[in-house]
Amino acid sequence: MSDLRPPFVQAMSRGALLLDGSTGTEFMRLRLSEADMRGDRFREHPCALASDFDILCLSRPELVTSVHESYLSAGADIIETNTCCAIRFSQSRFGTVSLTGEINREAARLAAEAAARYSTAERPRYVAGAIGPVAPNADPTALTEAYTEQATGLIEGGADLLLIETAFDLNCTLCAAIACRWAMERLGRELPVVFSFTSTDPTGRIHSGHSIGEILTAVAPFSPAALGFNCGSGPATLLPAIGRLIQESPYPIVYYPSAGLPRSGELPSPEEFAGILSPLLPSLSIVGGCCGTTPSHIAALAQLISRNTSKVTSP
Image (tube, rainbow, N blue to C red):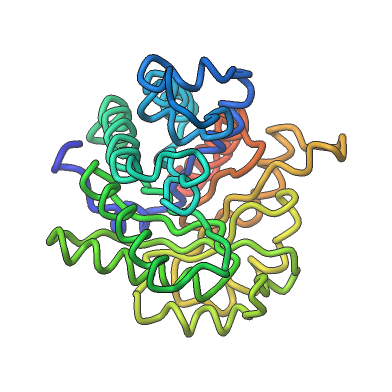
């Protein structure tokens, strides 16, 4: 991507940046078979790959690029790499541990190339290197090493920022943060790090039992570029937690919720999804969608942001 783009943190300070929606949802909509997932490269691979969407970065890169472009076309300012589970702990069940570094590098490269094609001087696009959660019973040393491998690949591939997302265990999150720091030191590069937690508690307390205040204290040494929540069971479920975070956090706020629970049969339309988030926009620096959201949801948010910006800039 062009070095003439304003730094990500500077761009974020100018108003809400729009994050993409779910890549997994888009892949599921394609109803990919085992053969589709394997492509030519993994035709003889001994383990099933049907649920390893991250491997598509190597087996079917054109599908990954297509999803990125669908969100960029919808108006996303930031696209996430297809790497939510691209860590050796998750890849072990697919027999692809040795490919973890390559998956992350290729994922970032694919996203960076797509973002570059859509970037203009007036509308730069950015790549968030997605770092997902791991079961909290993992050995901290091994976990930090695995996250370092992932972060290193994402940086080498061209990510503009690192996004530690869907975090539900504070100790695991700190391992990821340490790993990001190690990777940056190893490569001699400094990237912004964004933290996004998930919770089922309206107060924002996460699964490991930590409150918003405890989270803010724990991550302070890592100087988050932004901090907030994602996922959940719908766009309204974490609104109380986001309200508390807005009051307590010294950092820019990020919120990208799920569309809802598919089995409920009451998923909000893209317009309803955007409408629920509308009152929060003045307080958010990054907004987007998580599980179940599609390019249509992001397009609805893009229209909403555009209207709000027009009101602010009009005489």
